[in-house]
Amino acid sequence: MLKEIVRKDFREVDKNDEISKIFGYLYGEADLPIVMDGKKPWGMIDERRLIKSKLLGNEKIKDFVVGVPKLDASYSIKKAKERMVKSGVDKIIVTSDKRLVGYVTAIDIAKELGISKRAHELMEEIEAINEDDEMGDALNAMRRKNIKILPVVSNKKFCGVISIKNVLPLTSTHEKVTDYHQEKTSLLDAPVKGFIEVGVETCMPNDGVEEIIDIMEEQGFVIVCKNGEYMGVIEPIDLLK
Image 1 (tube, rainbow, N blue to C red):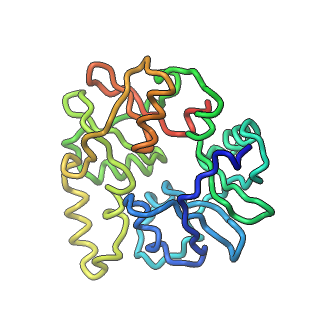
Image 2: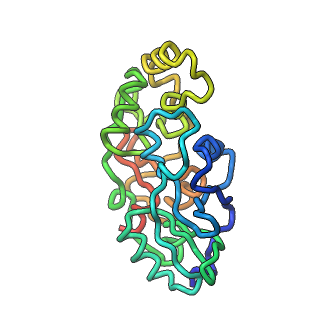
C-alpha cells in the first residue's frame, strides 16, 4: 500500500501565494511544495511552465500548477503506477480520509515493483547543446522542447546540464526589476559553459534500474553516456515505461 512508501518531506503552499515563495525549492534549498486550495491538496508546481514564463515574482502559484493524481494511502502500488503513467507526472499526492499525508514518486514505485530494464531502454534522446552556445539558445531549446533538463556537450563529450535552477535568473526579474533589459540581455548572450551544472553523475547504456535509481535519488535525473559521449536522459517517469 502507498502508506508504506509515502514521503513526508513536503511543505504546504497556498495556491494564492506568490510564486517567489517556492523559489527556494527550485534552487534545491527547501522541501517539495504541495499546492493547497484551502485545506484540500490541489496540485504541484509545473517547472516547464515556469521555464516558459517571464516572472516578476509576484505572480500567483495557481498559474503554474499541474494537477496530479490524489490517491488514498490504502491504494496499491500497482494502481498508483497505472495512474501515474496515465497522467504523465512523476509524483502523486497521498491522502488519508481526504487529508494530505505526503507524496510518492516514480522512483519509489519503480523500487517496489522491481523493474529490470536497462538504461538504453529507458532513456530519451534529448538533443544536447554545445557549451559555447549562448544561454538564450539554451532557454529557447528548453521552451521549444518542453524539457527541464538540457544536456551540454563539448567536442561531443558530455560536460554538464542546464536545468530550471540555471535558467530561473533568465526568467525571473524579482531581484532587479528596474534594469531588466540590460541585465537579461547580458545573461542571454553569455556562453552556456558559465552556467552549467558540473559533476553530474552518469550511467552506462547497459546499467540496470538499481544503478539508475541510486543516481536519480541524489540528482533527480540520470544522463546516459558511452565512452564519455552523451546518449540520452532518464527522468523518474521514464522508470515506469
